[in-house]
Image (cartoon, rainbow, N blue to C red; front, side, top):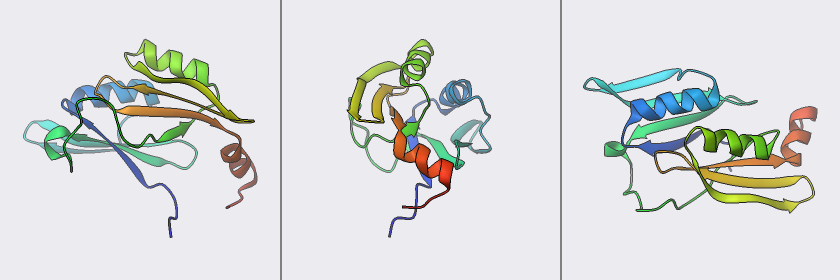
Length: 138
Protein backbone atom coordinates (compact mmCIF):
# COMPACT_ATOMS: atom_id res chain seq x y z
CA UNK A 1 0.00 0.00 0.00
CA UNK A 2 2.63 2.60 0.99
CA UNK A 3 5.17 2.81 -1.81
CA UNK A 4 7.58 5.36 -0.44
CA UNK A 5 7.99 8.85 0.87
CA UNK A 6 6.95 11.53 -1.61
CA UNK A 7 6.93 14.89 0.18
CA UNK A 8 7.44 16.17 3.70
CA UNK A 9 5.83 19.55 4.35
CA UNK A 10 6.99 22.01 6.99
CA UNK A 11 5.09 25.18 7.87
CA UNK A 12 6.57 28.66 8.29
CA UNK A 13 5.20 32.12 9.00
CA UNK A 14 7.98 33.53 6.80
CA UNK A 15 8.51 31.20 3.83
CA UNK A 16 11.26 33.38 2.34
CA UNK A 17 13.28 33.16 5.57
CA UNK A 18 12.65 29.41 5.77
CA UNK A 19 13.71 29.04 2.14
CA UNK A 20 17.00 30.82 2.88
CA UNK A 21 17.59 28.72 6.03
CA UNK A 22 16.91 25.42 4.29
CA UNK A 23 19.02 26.44 1.30
CA UNK A 24 21.91 26.87 3.77
CA UNK A 25 21.11 23.59 5.55
CA UNK A 26 20.67 21.53 2.39
CA UNK A 27 23.22 23.18 0.13
CA UNK A 28 20.75 23.33 -2.77
CA UNK A 29 18.24 25.87 -4.05
CA UNK A 30 14.51 25.21 -4.07
CA UNK A 31 13.53 23.79 -7.45
CA UNK A 32 9.90 24.92 -7.20
CA UNK A 33 8.47 28.19 -5.85
CA UNK A 34 4.83 29.26 -5.85
CA UNK A 35 4.07 32.82 -4.78
CA UNK A 36 1.03 34.51 -3.29
CA UNK A 37 1.32 38.22 -3.92
CA UNK A 38 4.96 39.27 -3.78
CA UNK A 39 6.18 36.53 -1.44
CA UNK A 40 6.72 32.79 -1.74
CA UNK A 41 3.79 30.79 -0.34
CA UNK A 42 5.28 27.36 -1.03
CA UNK A 43 8.79 26.21 -1.89
CA UNK A 44 10.09 22.74 -2.52
CA UNK A 45 13.53 21.14 -2.47
CA UNK A 46 14.63 17.76 -3.87
CA UNK A 47 17.22 16.20 -1.62
CA UNK A 48 19.02 13.05 -0.69
CA UNK A 49 19.85 9.75 -2.31
CA UNK A 50 16.32 9.30 -3.66
CA UNK A 51 15.55 12.98 -4.37
CA UNK A 52 12.72 13.13 -1.86
CA UNK A 53 10.80 16.37 -1.60
CA UNK A 54 10.91 18.78 1.32
CA UNK A 55 8.27 21.48 1.00
CA UNK A 56 7.69 24.60 3.07
CA UNK A 57 4.21 26.11 3.05
CA UNK A 58 3.09 29.48 4.36
CA UNK A 59 1.28 29.06 7.69
CA UNK A 60 -1.77 30.78 6.16
CA UNK A 61 -2.26 27.74 3.94
CA UNK A 62 -1.46 25.01 6.48
CA UNK A 63 -4.03 22.22 6.31
CA UNK A 64 -4.49 22.20 10.10
CA UNK A 65 -3.80 24.53 13.04
CA UNK A 66 -0.27 24.52 14.42
CA UNK A 67 0.24 23.55 18.05
CA UNK A 68 1.88 26.11 20.32
CA UNK A 69 4.89 23.79 20.74
CA UNK A 70 6.73 21.33 18.47
CA UNK A 71 4.68 18.15 18.24
CA UNK A 72 3.49 15.43 15.92
CA UNK A 73 5.20 13.01 13.59
CA UNK A 74 8.97 13.19 13.29
CA UNK A 75 10.40 12.50 9.84
CA UNK A 76 13.98 11.28 10.10
CA UNK A 77 16.41 12.15 7.30
CA UNK A 78 19.39 9.87 6.78
CA UNK A 79 22.75 11.39 7.73
CA UNK A 80 26.25 9.96 7.98
CA UNK A 81 27.23 11.68 11.23
CA UNK A 82 24.55 12.43 13.84
CA UNK A 83 26.73 14.61 16.09
CA UNK A 84 28.07 16.72 13.22
CA UNK A 85 24.58 17.10 11.74
CA UNK A 86 23.02 18.21 15.03
CA UNK A 87 25.93 20.57 15.73
CA UNK A 88 25.57 22.15 12.29
CA UNK A 89 21.79 22.54 12.60
CA UNK A 90 22.12 24.10 16.06
CA UNK A 91 24.87 26.37 14.73
CA UNK A 92 22.44 27.56 12.05
CA UNK A 93 19.78 28.44 14.64
CA UNK A 94 17.89 25.22 15.40
CA UNK A 95 17.43 23.98 18.97
CA UNK A 96 17.75 20.42 20.23
CA UNK A 97 14.38 18.68 20.45
CA UNK A 98 15.52 15.15 21.24
CA UNK A 99 19.16 14.43 22.05
CA UNK A 100 21.15 11.76 20.26
CA UNK A 101 19.66 8.38 21.20
CA UNK A 102 20.93 4.93 20.28
CA UNK A 103 17.92 2.86 19.18
CA UNK A 104 19.84 -0.36 18.52
CA UNK A 105 22.92 -1.56 16.72
CA UNK A 106 23.26 0.68 13.66
CA UNK A 107 20.32 2.93 14.52
CA UNK A 108 20.85 6.35 16.13
CA UNK A 109 18.41 9.29 16.09
CA UNK A 110 18.23 12.92 17.16
CA UNK A 111 15.93 15.80 16.33
CA UNK A 112 15.98 19.58 16.36
CA UNK A 113 13.38 22.31 16.07
CA UNK A 114 14.11 24.59 13.13
CA UNK A 115 13.79 28.38 13.59
CA UNK A 116 10.23 28.13 12.24
CA UNK A 117 8.92 25.63 14.81
CA UNK A 118 9.17 22.39 12.79
CA UNK A 119 10.74 19.19 14.13
CA UNK A 120 13.56 17.96 11.89
CA UNK A 121 14.79 14.44 12.63
CA UNK A 122 18.17 13.01 11.65
CA UNK A 123 19.08 9.34 11.75
CA UNK A 124 21.95 6.98 11.14
CA UNK A 125 20.06 3.95 9.87
CA UNK A 126 21.93 0.80 8.85
CA UNK A 127 18.93 -0.61 6.98
CA UNK A 128 18.78 2.53 4.82
CA UNK A 129 22.49 2.15 4.03
CA UNK A 130 22.09 -1.54 3.22
CA UNK A 131 19.19 -0.87 0.83
CA UNK A 132 21.08 2.00 -0.78
CA UNK A 133 24.20 -0.12 -1.27
CA UNK A 134 22.40 -3.14 -2.68
CA UNK A 135 19.44 -1.54 -4.37
CA UNK A 136 17.18 -3.97 -2.47
CA UNK A 137 13.56 -3.30 -1.77
CA UNK A 138 12.11 -4.66 1.41
